[in-house]
Length: 297
Length: 302
Image 1 (tube, rainbow over the protein chains, first blue to last red):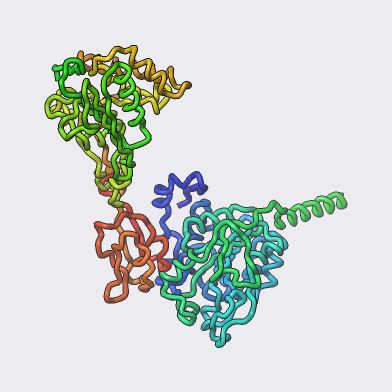
Image 2 (image 1 turned 60 degrees about the vertical axis):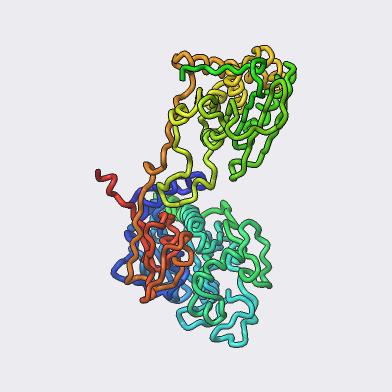
C-alpha cells in the first residue's frame, strides 16, 4: 500500500479512484478491535482522516512513529499499525522531540488531546511550537477530560456543566490554534470531523510541512460532554459542528465562546517558512565537528 | 422521405405555421424574429407569439410564427404546424404533436441538454429520464425529418451560438423565399461582429439539407444514440462489521438515501441495498470503522 497519491484541490476530480486505493484496515491493528471509544466519539473519524492522510502522502508504516499521551486521544494511537509510543500524561511532544532529534528519518506524529496538550502539557506545546521541529501535532479537542469521567478542561466552553463544574464552567477558554500561532508554530490549522475530506487534506498538508504543524481537530464527546449538557445525540452533535462554523474568517474572540455556540473558524491559519529546528541543529553539529577535525589536524 | 416539401405562401389559402422550440438561451426568439421580419419585408401578414419559460427547469420555450395572406390567430393549433424547428433534441420530440401528421417538416439540432430533473435517481448507473428516440423514429411520422448536429457544426465554424442560424439555413430550403432576403435580414439582426460566421453557417445549413435530400454524405456528425452511464458505474457493496458497531446512529442519520437502519440489537443494518448509491458518507463518518464500501469486481472478472 505504498502508492503515492497526491491530494490537492485540483485532484478532487480523481477522487473516486483514490477512494478505492485506500483500505483503512491495512493501517489498523485489527486484533484490538472494536476500539474502546464511546458510541459516536469523533476521535474515530479523526483517526480515519489521519490514516487517510498518511496513505495519501505515501508514508511507509516503518517510517511512521505515532506518539500519544494519556486520555481518550492517547488511546487512539494504539490502534494504528505502525511504530506507536504511548507516553506519560502531557509529555508526548517532549518524547516526540527526542525521537525526532535521534531519528530525523521518521515521520513523527503526535496524537494528543485538549487536556493532555493544553493543561498538563501546555509548556511542552509552546516550546515545541517555538523550536519548530518537524513534528505533526494532532490535537483532538473534545472540550473535556473524557476518560477520567468528565472533568473541566482548558477548552471547555463557558457555562458548560462538567463533574468538576456542577454550576457551569466560569473560566475563560484557551484558543489552542492561536496559542500555537503565537508560540511560533510554522503550520496551524483547524478542522471539524464531519468535513472528513477537508480534515484529511489539512492533515496531509501538515504532514508534508517541514516544521511544527499544529492541527486542531474539533471532536465530539457524546457520552460525557454531550449527555451532561444536553447537546443531543451523536448525529446531532456531529451535524451541529457545521451549524456553528464559519470557514473563511478568523475573528475569534478569546474571551467569548471561541468555538460554540458562536462561530468557529476552520482551515489553515498559519503557513510560515520559519527554519526547521532539526536541520539547524544538525548544521551546527556538522560545523562543530568540522572545526574539531581541523583542530586535530 | 423522397417527398420534398416546398411551402409557398402564395399558393396556400391557410397561413404557413412554423413552430420554433428550445430550452432557452439558444436563440429561439432570434429565429422567429428573423423569420417574421423576412415575411414582413416580402409583404405577408405575420403573427408571432412566444413563451420563454425555462424549458431546462420544466417550463416551456417556444415561438409560434404564422404568415400568409391573411392570419387571424397568433397561435398554432395542435397538429397544424408545417415546420417544427427544435434547437434541442428532446424539445423537438416533445412538440411533435403540433406538427401536421404525415406532411410536416421536422428540423432539429441533435444537441442534448439533459435537464436536472431527468436525473432523479442518484444510484450509480441509474437510467437518465431522457428520450431515447432516434431520427428514424421521427421519420415514420412526418414528411421530412432532419437531425443536424448544428451546435457542433457552428462551434467548428467559429461560434457555438450561431447554431440557430444554421437551422434557419435549413428552414430556408423548405420555404420559397429568395436567399438574398434571408441574408439581408440575418445581417441586420445578428450582432455586427458575428455577421460573417452567421452567413457561413447559414450556407452550411442549406448545403446540409440539400445534400441530405440527394442522399449524399453530409458534413457534421451522425446521430449518436444516448449512452447511459452504466458503463462507467462501479457497483459497490456495503459491508457492516456488526461486532464493531456501537449503534451511535451517525450513519443512519447522515445517509442521504435513508437506506440504513438500526436493528433491534442497536446495530446498523443496510435495510434497502438497492437504494445505496455508494456515496461513502457512512463509511467516512463511522467512528468505529464498522462500515466499508467495496467495489463489486464481477464485471472486471468477465
